[in-house]
Image (cartoon, rainbow, N blue to C red; front, top):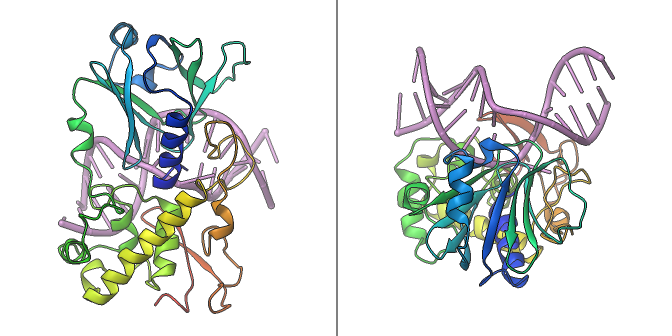
Length: 274
DNA sequence: GTGCCTGTTACCTC
DNA sequence: AGAGGTAACAGGCA
């Protein structure tokens, strides 16, 4: 669910909610594996009294710089953050609650329990293996082409690989490949330099669109992406192929197909994407 | 109820 | 190196 635009939306929502500068009073851990790296007692002890210096995004990670340590969330499939008054009813999907000096709570809800929260002295071990940020100017078209050329992999799996490029997930990869008119099974080192530039542009366009729409919320269930205040992202109306199997391609009207690549549902137009 | 699907990632084997 | 399988989970849906 949460890919780059969704995580960035949540980061911006957290900042807008005035979280920066607040102090973490204590933590309530309701699911141990959520904080897999640390024992519950150590996590609670260590986080106590630290204040939030800044909130950033790297790939699909939310990164809270605290006064001493770094607090990192990965939402995986169904993780959600919510700021709540303690009197707000709790839900059973709540895995972690951080009590703030303001009297509010930062609640982490996660239906499928895949999400993770790390409290570390240094973020490097977690963040340094990630590839470049797709929207970073330092990722030039030349560098992107060079990186694509050094792998012989299906475009779909390569673009999902966070060590190759950070922040894309199933939705935006399918959308970017459609936008670039490239087949998900095409091998990465067969792209011409021109095609690779078109692909980078396409990736940036679909991400930018996702950001402007504050993310993609696909349905109505609680396992979907929601913003901090519970509202939906509006990007679904921009999707051209994702979960549109059997419908007409908006470009050529041919029927959109679905195949499985790298164990992931992959949507594309067999006419536009050769 | 049954069985299959799902937006992520780590880890394993070939 | 890269591909494929499995596992971690629980809900949605036909």
